[in-house]
Amino acid sequence: SYPEETKFLRSELYKWAGDANCYDKDEPYVEVVTSPNNPDGSIRGTVVNREGGKAIHDLAYYWPQYAPITSKADHDAMLFTFSKATGHAGTRIGWAIVKDKVIAAKMVKFIEVSSIGVSREAQLRAAKVLGVIADECRNTDVKGENFFEYGRRLMSERWGKLREVGMKSNGVFSLPKYPRDYCKFTGEYTDSNPAFAWLKSKEGLNCENLLRDESKIITRGGPSFGVDSTYTRVSMLSRDVEFELLLERLAAVRGTVNGN
Ligand SMILES: Cc1ncc(COP(=O)(O)O)c(C=O)c1O
Image 1 (cartoon, rainbow, N blue to C red):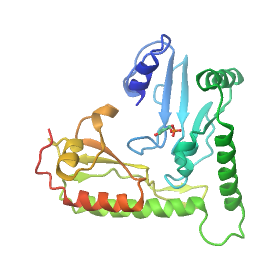
Image 2: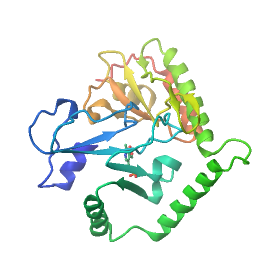
Image 3: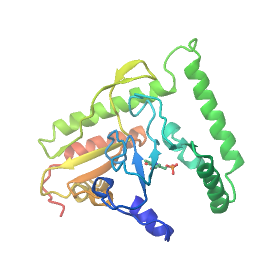
Image 4: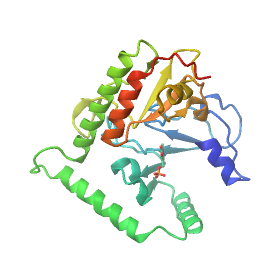
């Protein structure tokens, strides 16, 4: 999470200034916009919009398996990661598209200083995988689903199952609703199927503790993300067996342990 990271880096230049929605200082600022957002999956834009500010758009989850691609991303500074695009988190490859050459050069220098350079092997692997996926998407002769269609179907099936469990929970927990939108990549109206489920329990319950104590489900609670403990974040990207076990355990949660 950003507060933890900012503190860890002990930067003299930057301080964590809190939720952008509450930012009212008349000072230079950097606003990080994560869209689709982690943890709640919402589509976001800048909110401060003041002179002297810069925005960094984190588009880690802006891929068709998670959300409709409604427009070409065209921000001044955009971050992407191989990990959420294809699931290759361990390869540790990300990239940025940055319009200002001076900022881009500083970012290159930062990578050099902090890591002495990015593993060539990892770069080659990422370039190959992305190349294969892009070729498959462009080649209309390929029969069956392409990589993103496959991912979208899988995510949509998982969300369908999770929502069913949520509906049967008698209000013990609920899930956010997302607007359907036109996806320019697939040419269809599609749903958002975020990589995380942002679970909310009944008022008065601590959702993270409740899931842990009643069903041995490990999640990350709302307070880590600046909201109250009725919220918790559950990964939707586990392996099939783990996901089925998650559904089974969630279905067994009764909300009788108050978890506080
Ligand atoms: C919104 C967002 N951005 C960036 C990242 C960084 O991903 P990685 O370190 O795997 O490149 C994550 C990982 O969880 C994320 O959720």
